[in-house]
Length: 151
Image (cartoon, rainbow, N blue to C red; front, top):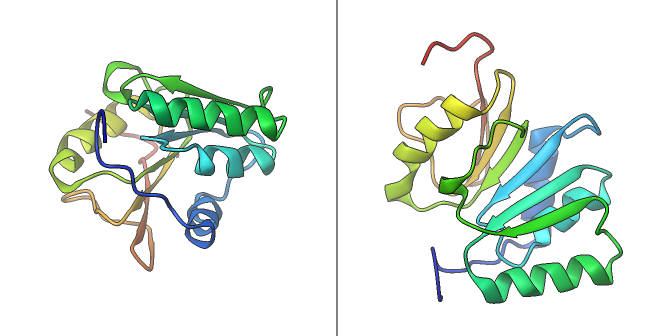
């Protein structure tokens, strides 16, 4: 770990379950927060979804970009070497995150403020406090941003 949270690779079966839970369509714009080696972003792009990732570890960003290029997915996806805390997420309709417990309250506020109503979030392992999941499979939690939210 050079920057950010420790890297933990998501196995293919679980990342596919995460993407299935989001019910992605070609109208979605997908983002993986803390995208690691890019495997979730790449899997979403292979499904025809416009996909993005934010990662703070420059080595993982280089690995992600190399894998995207190798799989000829550069027109469908992009990995940013940047903290997702410093960007607006308002353009995204579907989100995955493998956060750590202490960031979840702040991340919940950010997502509710920036993601439009109807947007979906799947959290791997850690739940958002005081936020009822729509669906739970294994240690994956699907949340939906309410359509009429007053911040």
